[in-house]
Amino acid sequence: MLELVAVRHRYDGRVVLDIERFAVSPGSGIAIVGPNGSGKSTLLRLLALLERPSEGEVRLDGIVVAGAGPRRRITLVEQRPVLLRGTVRDNLEFGLQVRGIGRTEVNRRVEGVAARLGITPLLHRRRHELSDGEVQRVAVARALAVEPDVLLLDEPASSADRAAAQTLYRALAEERARRPFAVCLASHQLEDAYRWADDVRALAEGRLSPVTPENLFRVDLPVSGSGGDLKHVCVGTIEIAATTDKTGPAILAVPPTDIFVSREPLASSARNVFRGRVTRLTHQRPGTVHVTADVGVELVAVVTEEAARDLGLTPGGPVVFSFKASAVRVF
Amino acid sequence: MDFLGEGLRRAVALLLSGDVEVYGIALLTLKIGLIATVFACGLGIPVGFVLATKPFWGRRAALTVVNTALAFPTVVVGLLLYGLLSRRGPLGGVGWLYTWQAIVVGDVALAFPIAAALAAAAVQGVDPRIRRTAETLGAGRWRTAWTVAREARFALAAVITTAFGHVVAEIGSAMTVGGNIRGQTRTLTTAVALYTSQGDFGLALALGLILLLLALLVNVALQALQGRGHA
Image (cartoon, rainbow over all chains, first blue to last red; front, side, top):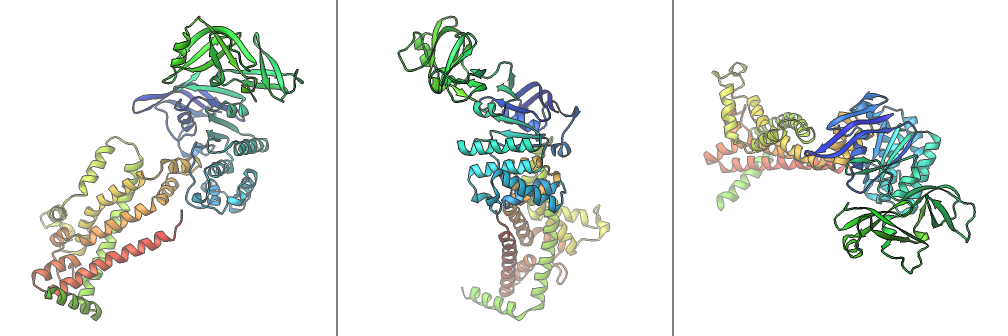
């Protein structure tokens, strides 16, 4: 078990991370979600033992740790990874060589992980001959080659297109099926988070948020919908229409930016129209307002400050949230 | 202009004739230059690494000291060293005054801050993700330093050539603690100064050409070494 305990981390005197406890259990899959600048990368660097927390402890199996020894059980793939000098093969061999692993075993592991990640044709290439997406895949392969107990991934799909990201996630799932290890993934994309989520934790301004990320609902999708892929799913006291061919347990996500906010129902193609009351207005970024409303369940929408002002939104005031069935993401 | 042309002709003739004194001076300069560069870089580059990578109390002040030492006048270094090595000085018992070893010590003192400051700048110029990548893949302190050094190899090679160039070109310290003794401590720069003052312009020019040639050879050798590596 890898843990941060009572950690408070500062850069130039400014607190960037303030976490009472964060634990990564053996074999678990944890997603950390949060906007850019929320402290995800710092959290991962502390977990990777690449930085010492200004205050607090990092524990591995209950023992306070730091330095190169315990670091060998944890590997981080950075958001924009770099390859070391040499070929892709040299990079894949690096972590194995520093562990003093024999040549035969090095070759077996390098060729195995390269085949599983689909990078065998790249093995002889150098870093300047690779695209950003290929560099990211090589970096993941390089981390997997050392067979860590905990793999930390910082925005692993940021340099990849959707298809490449799917390949990467599939390869990671296969790798975990082959050899169980914990994965802790930071992402600002909920899709990425829920692809892994045994446990999703939200980070905002360096603190773990007690609430789950916005507009996410665990549901049980019915076997057949009333019309094609359009399905109606009960969430709290409302019924959300979603287009999906999936059935069974799933996660519904409604992106806050896909919700239309109005005072009265609008004539539109939106299948989901809910009346409710504003419970909270928060300014998380300049120029935008997060409108939290109770429409039977709590939903959050993002509007511009100008729109919030024009609509006269106030806590306790009436509001209508509308969104299309196709805007509902299903994982 | 005639004397310049005449001097150049004499220089070429001396070089081609294999004059024992000229080549003796050149070899002594090369020996002193190489030994001093090895010591200065051997000490200065690790110090530069530490200054660039290890946060410690007084690091900024240490960097300022090293950078200031870059501009230390060579004759002042020679003077201080003279004070230390002279018979009445604290290191007088060593008996190194007016020996080539004294010139090496002065050159190391001059080139050390160059090596440290330029190595610190070279290492600071390496993408910090390289260091983190090596560490997260399990590399220890030395392997990580080696990985970073490989990334900074061009800049570190420039550190070595700059240190060597500074060592072979300095005159103040070599003259003060070496004494410019014929056959013992006469280096290319002290000899150039002497023969110029004696009016032997051809010999001075020949020695100056050899000095340039030495610097050129060291640069070519280092570039050839760098050329063997790829990204």
